[in-house]
Length: 112
Image 1 (tube, rainbow, N blue to C red):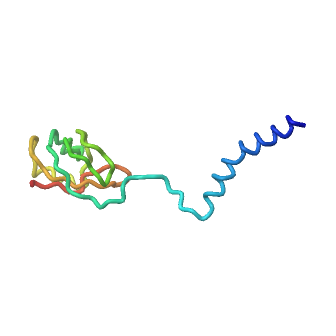
Image 2: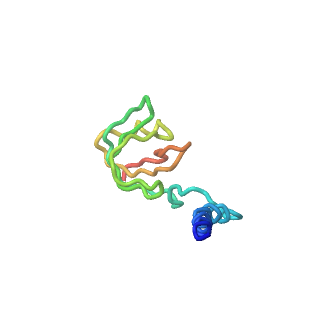
Image 3: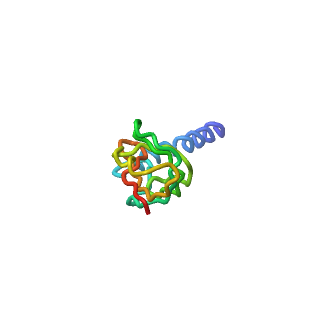
């Protein structure tokens, strides 16, 4: 009988987390964590490469807080590729990024 009681306790404890998790979702907003809900802000960057045809620019940029990205160098699509005509490799720029169609995208780029 001792073993039956111990088995019942072990099974109850094993089932408890699943029951708690199922109950915790009732009426609660359980959206997955995503980027910060901060408004896009201009970020300092340096142009490393411009691909006018592809509509992309490679930037060495400071942290992008609204997208939760640390400082790094990477290529980004540009929302309006015509803007790229106003810049050249080596320019220091002020860039605003946002999530467009699920991708980190340059939505504005200016000379400081």
